[in-house]
Amino acid sequence: MFTSQPIGFVNSPYKDASEIPKGLGAKHEADGVLKILPEFEPGLTDIEGFSHLIVIWEFDRSHGFELLGTPPSDNRPHGVFATRSPRRPNPIGLTIVELRRREGIDLHVRGVDMLHRTPILDIKPYLSSIPSERLRRGWLAEAEARQRG
Image (cartoon, rainbow, N blue to C red):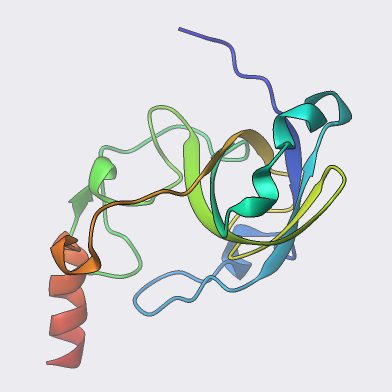
């Protein structure tokens, strides 16, 4: 086990979880800033060359967990590991954002789905060699089809 240490905090327009778009067709297009702590600035060297970033963060305001739950995008229960629920055994979130620009220790991004002042645990450049036609969306695709149907 390890003890996590925030490398920064999210500056987000969302102050309450109810404000974050959820469910089928939810768009995550909000702008925000990943405010990295000054001691981690050298770790941002060359990050500007990437269009998208994976942000690993902590669900710091979520308590407890449920192994089965019914997400807002479906009326059927699913396992927590098949959803993006904040109620997880380890309260870790992952979001892919578009890097718009860097200003010193501030990374201006689009696509935040975190609350204001959420602790950031790590950032990695988004790299994928999986062609979109090979990606499967599991139960979410089935729920979308039922909604259209």
